[in-house]
Length: 321
Ligand SMILES: [Zn+2]
Image (cartoon, rainbow, N blue to C red):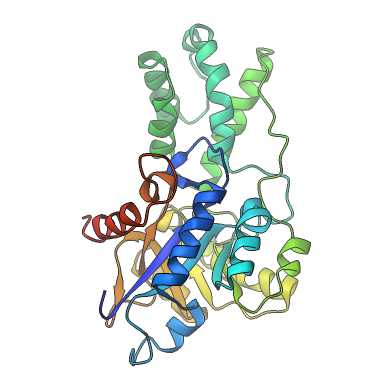
């Protein structure tokens, strides 16, 4: 690990979530953090970006801890652990989610899945379920072939090539369609994301807030004006709400291109991707590799934290192509 920095990416610290690739359980997270403080140098994103060019002050075996999206469990579950262990972290907020009652579109879609499959016959009889022809075709194709859960991830992956507007419109149409058929959709009674009071309650300098856009679009699917607005507006909003400078950015879903990178580099000091790998001298500060951590990657056969599985996962992720 000489000369290398590992940026760890977390999403949900919770016991349940439909997408287990984004989840780590509270106890496992705490064990993982304890191990990290004992075995690595945890540095901040500020420190990394300030020392990036010369690199000489960055210790070997350095780790940066990051959280994406601004899930409520960062505030309720992860932050108390970090605070107790005095571990710094950066949280990338999607400003449109903060202080909102909204659910992430993938979660909304997941809630529709059970009623959709239960009413498969009715849906397949209709010519149009949703208004975008190719999405309609794909959805009907997926429904007709499948009886189970895996179609949700196939459909999510497929939708990721569309603009945020089309994705949200499709989900609203699906919800309306099911409602029309008087099919009940289960409600999520828990708030998904943090609010500004909670963000401002975390006033420890060790926790910094970065931007993850306003609406979490996949920026490579969007027009230039939307890209520019998502990148600048989110920074403005966090700065206004917290009174703190926002200098770190994180690309939604990790997607960026040269044009997007250029826009980001105009107003931020760093940007993270979701591409797996370590960071070293000469890496691009506006396209930082990270290693996404989930329950499976850090737990042994008993289901609790294993430093061997964790270390092996870091290695395997870093050589993943
Ligand atoms: Zn995200």
